[in-house]
Length: 201
Image (cartoon, rainbow, N blue to C red; front, side):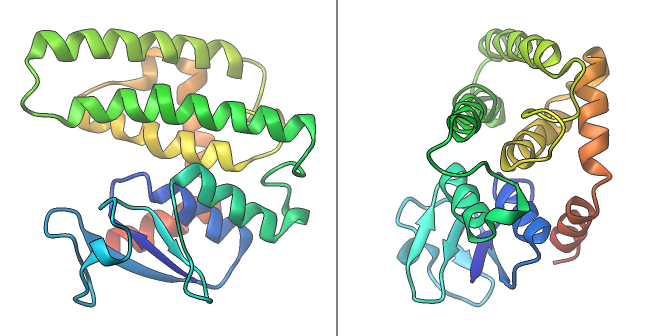
């Protein structure tokens, strides 16, 4: 398998999952501006949408969209517990979390990267994001992970997009439960390995 990624993007999520599962894979860096891969290919021929993450399977199939990728990977090693078994109520709950993260945290944060947005507009988006943080603070109170006591693909995704707060001068210390949650995930060996690999490439 090949994971097409760019540093400081949502592709960190499937990267973490690949390492949690101890699957064999190749990392291929993508320049988000030029849309060229590190080995000189046109990334648009791999993913016409033009953004990471993209997972290339050994048979040549390409899978895009982070929530789909991480569930596919987790199902390759169902015994890992990174995703509940398909068809169960817990799996639906996981999908509920993945949808919340992608629509409310990922999409809500991504808007703040837009330098053309006036500060007053960014302030509106920040306040909406803070309300979502308040919700997460409440949901994580008394739990180690989103699904309870077990790390899941949803945690890899949430950790990834909350990590962007440093780019927006948002201090998660204002949400102590959320801050502790992030610190706990950051300490996981697979997370550390993924961060090191992306920083050194």
